[in-house]
Length: 271
Image 1 (tube, rainbow, N blue to C red):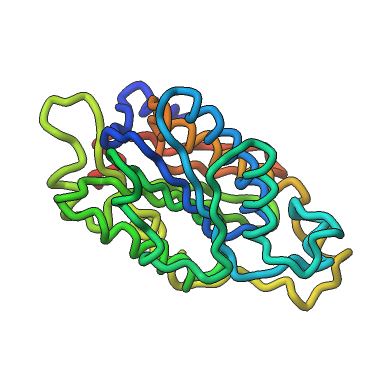
Image 2 (image 1 turned 60 degrees about the horizontal axis):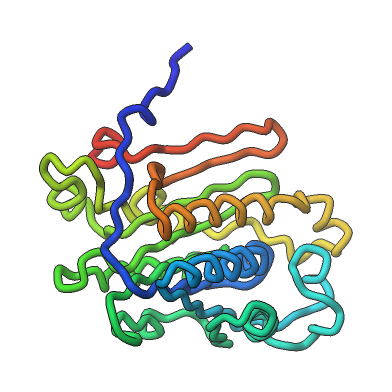
């Protein structure tokens, strides 16, 4: 049996120095609604350190009856924009700076010059269609030399009982080879875009469940799958904000209880 020892050879991700961090949550449905609560708690923790955290929740959909079983909404939310419901609820309860946009995500929504000081933007994709992921992938085009790697794309996805979380900030393999590992630094500054690791994310839609009844959807997809993806995303966000992150891809399967991560090593990054 081969044993993966790559964690022992891994190095931490070093994000650019920042004074302000913004979490742009793209998709506020099954996984996104759970991520919204995790992001809010992380923001609260960051704000106690003297740095500033803000968030923008982005989703063009409204709350429907079928959403209440799987997503963090209640009957009183029916008919209201998902992003607005979550932003309003969490801003009021924790005193946070959370905005809502009831439109599809576009990179024009990213503002690297917001406020004063150095900014870091994390685009958190909780979406299941290629067009939305293409928009998230384009956000990494903002990482020109003048801005370093100040935009990161964290993508979470799932099937019925399995899922993955991928983190990247570099859009091309050439840039990875040129900049990912500064000479003798002991850390990494460049991770491959999720679209480089899995190009199919921008091509193939997941199998639709819209022809199934609500009861059939519950049976087809684990009720805990979105919670699991959100928990993994939350751990990545913690590593980005507070340091020490040594992985850039995580895969898990609920029926077998298995989980594995791909660690930040030259062998894994510079393939």
